[in-house]
Length: 260
Ligand code: HXC
Image 1 (tube, protein in one colour):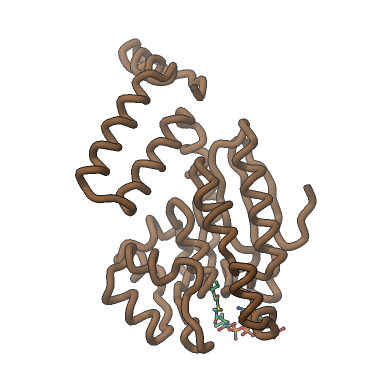
Image 2 (cartoon, protein in one colour):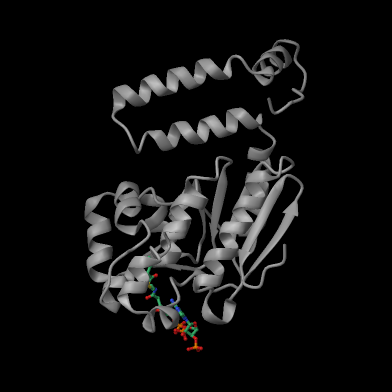
C-alpha cells in the first residue's frame, strides 16, 4: 500500500507511522484520515507486528489540528452527513486491539491533540504543546477533546483549555497525567520505538488484555470493572504463554513466547 500523506515503516515488530505534511504542520485532512485508517488496519492484521508508534514529521508539530483550509470550504451538511472524523473512533480506536503509542514531537492542537489522546499512551518531546483551540475558530472539539482531555487532566484544566484555547507544555502535561513521560525531542522517536519494542516483545494476548482492561476503567463502574478484570485474568491463565512465562520464571530462564 502506498501512502501520500503518511509514512509507514516497520522496525522489527513495531510499525512506525509518521504524519507527513510538515509544511501544513501535519494538519489532518480527509486524505490523512483515510490513509491512517488503512495503516492501522494493516498494522492490526499483520501478525508480525505487536505495537505501533504514531508521530509527526518535522520538529515543529505532531499535528496542528484538522485541516482548517479544508474545513473552511465545507458546508455543515457535509460534516453531519459524512459524520466528520467518526471513522477514527470506529476504525482506529475500537478496531485496534494491539497497543499503540503517540510520540508527540511538537504542537498537538485540536484534532492533533485528540488524535494523540486516542493512543494507549502519549510520550511527549520536551517541546510538545497540547491544546484544544477550536473555540477560536467558532467551533469546539469534535473527535474526543472535551471527553478524553477531561478524563485525563480533570475538569478544571480541561475546561480552562477548551474555553481559552491556551496550550499546555510538556511539563504541565506530564504533571497533569496527560502524558506518560517526557523525552528530549532528539531522542523521542527512538525512545518511543524502543518502548514499543518492549511491548511488542510481551506475550501478545496478555498485551491486548492489559490494554483492554485499562480502557474498561474509563467506561464502566468499579464493581463491573473489577469483575471484568478478574475474568480476563482468569482467561489468560489458559494461554500457552502463561504456562511458558511461569515455567521460565521457576526454571530461571528466558521465556519463549508463542503469542497464544
Ligand atoms: C491547515 C494549517 C493548520 C491547520 C497550521 N497550518 N495549522 N493548515 N490546518 N490546522 C499551516 C499554516 O496555514 C501555514 O501554512 C503552515 O501550516 C505553518 O503554520 P503557521 O501558522 O505559519 O506557523 P506558526 O506561526 O509557527 O504557528 C503555529 C500554530 C498555528 C500556532 C500551530 O499554525 C496555528 O494556530 N494553527 C492552527 C491550530 C488550530 O486552530 N488547530 C485546531 C483546528 S480545528 P501556509 O501555507 O499558510 O504558510 C480542529 C477541529 C477538530 O482540529 C475536530 C474535528 C472533528
